Length: 344
Image (cartoon, rainbow, N blue to C red; front, top):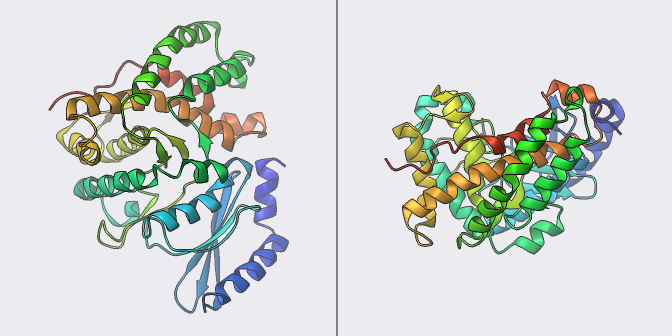
């Protein structure tokens, strides 16, 4: 089934009736009763969410497509291991990729300006890094629910796989030019060396959200009560790779972003170092900054794989609508180091 077909199903009356019946039964197990309020704010090829009113406030139903189906079981795992990091999970049907969670509040982007978010992000990334360290011992459980292993030891072979796939496609279908293939081939030995350094660093692999930005954080006024949502892109990887998407997004929305990289302003550097402080017992700060720079480079493969999963089986038009993101993220390996390991 293509994403367009899934969206048609997910927005149809028959699916809504099925969800209502399931959600009503699951809510009853928690002493909650639906009020009839029902809103489906988005339906995309990889997932859809429905806001359901209850007599104790709204809850959220989410359905995931094949490429992100692990999210339902993963949020339950995270909720078990790090209570309070995600909105309370009320029910999960892992086989169907369904989950039901309490509302976590408005998203950060809707209530605070980018400038107001700087000190918030310092606290958020530190709390999130501590959660990643708590989850570092959950590899087998994470992989068992379908989270992909994109750890440093797995990344080089995965990069080769994506390169081989894209090499067989013409550029107008999301493939690579001959020159791009040659350049990526030439950088693969460097990628292996970067991954080897990350693997030997002592920073343990963990659940890596890979899409942590201000529209995926629910904010009710404090870092301690913030909740992280939308774990469909999560992988098992070096935790430091989170700082590819997060720092890029924070800098972009704050207007300190040039080309494809943040400008390393004092605000961006404080967020970076607030995250790294949680790992200060494992290495000195200069080493951690270098490792984070390497993780931002290798994280381009993680991003390419995320879109590869989400868009698998989709028609060419869908890949084009998203500007062929698998190719574009893989080409990020060719970028020069972006300065995230610099000293203040």
